[in-house]
Length: 246
Ligand code: PGA
Image 1 (spheres, protein in one colour):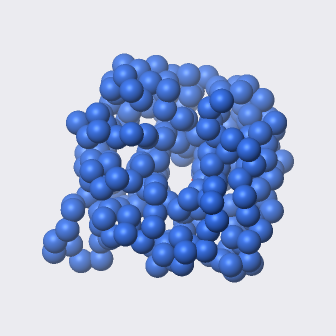
Image 2: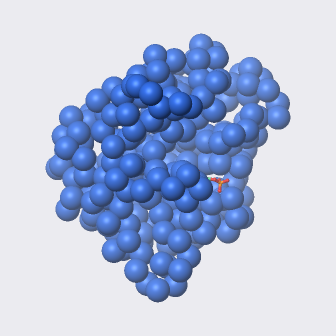
């Protein structure tokens, strides 16, 4: 059975219920699902120290350099040292608000892999790309751009399909759009990445809630979710994770 993933991206927020209560409520993963919590950098070690088996920690970003004079940056090795196992890379907020290009994302991917972190690589199109019916080519370019040599060395890489128009907007993709688009992403992975990653997990992210999750999993092709807003509530996050076992 394929592993399913539910990833809680807290972004620059803390859960209103508090970290300890949140992690206590999240508890153990439902069978076959890996639960991953991605807190802001300063809370990584705290969260890593508190989690139980079956729960893992992700950073939301890392520096593209290994170390050196890069004021304000946090290296992949530091993140790993704090107990993170995963790192989210290429999130559209990083690409759009912090001007991360495909080349920057590819360099981050390389240092993450060389440091032993598993990347959760986000790809996703803007609304105008969808309107112009260029989604498959656009996403294939993002996948191709991430075809760093380091991918050969990566034991695992996870892809998150996150259409920009669905992130934090309350407008989620339908199950049919997800199925069709992730099919295109799978083709690009097989075309541009080493064969060992042909079956890489593909998650969906963008306004996932307990209310829309059943429709999103109905096609059976989604390997999990990257959840923003709804992940700040442990009950909602677990309801979403629970849908992956149905
Ligand atoms: P959202 O964020 O669930 O709040 O739309 C998803 C994400 O940015 O990963």
